[in-house]
Length: 149
Image (cartoon, rainbow, N blue to C red):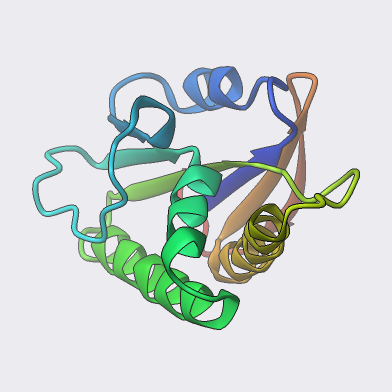
C-alpha cells in the first residue's frame, strides 16, 4: 500500500496520476463514493482511494473516537487483504492532511481531526511507502523493501 498525504490543493491527485498513470480504478469520497471494505468488484490491479478524510468524518458522525479507529483499522486490513491477494495488485490511498493549523472549536470537528490524525498514523504504519506532497513535489518519508511499483 502506498499512502499519499499533503495539504488541500497541493497536487496529490496530479502527482498520483503522473506516477501511476490512469490505468487503474479510482474511488473518490469527493464524488460521494461510499466507504467500502470489499473490492471484489474491482477488475484492475491498481486501485486508488481518494479523500479518505471524508470517509473518516462519516465514521466520526456515528461512533466515538475509539470505535471509529477500531473500524478504520479493520477497513485498512481488508484493503490490504485485497492488495495481497494478487502479486500485481497495488493500492494507493490519498488523504488530505487536516491535522495542522488551528484546532476547531466545534466538538465534532475536533473529533474528526483527532481520528484522522490517528488513522493516518495507522495507514503510515501499515503502508509500504508514504509520500507527502506539497506544491506538487513529493517527499518520501517511508519506503520498505516490500514496496511494489
